Length: 130
Image 1 (cartoon, rainbow, N blue to C red):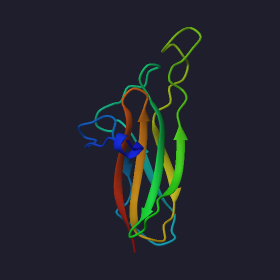
Image 2 (image 1 turned 90 degrees about the vertical axis):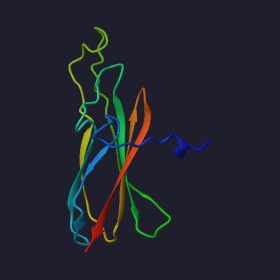
Image 3 (image 1 turned 180 degrees about the horizontal axis):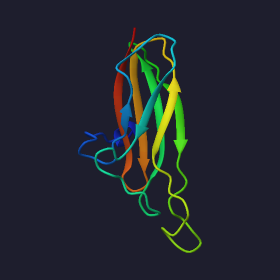
Image 4 (image 1 turned 45 degrees about the vertical axis):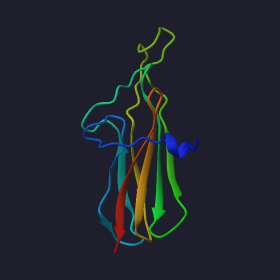
């Protein structure tokens, strides 16, 4: 069995676990732009001590390349934990990140997210460099 076999994907409008990548369809070579990756855009994902998103990772694979490059890895630690008990803590992290990057080649952005109960989820979005 491979780790890749464990990745789940779905339409984010019907599944609260699929990462949503918001990015332009076209960018200029070498110019910095922002992408946003989050979960629960259409259907909210719970953010409780018992059920939460632990992290999001973002990758880029240039078109025609065999190699994928990691853009960033973002961990979320605030899930309402407290010495008073579950879901009584002072902070709840929202699983969403904004990343600035620049590209020199067209390719595909990938996002992976880990739900502590429902496992690994992925999504992708193509970006064209002009």
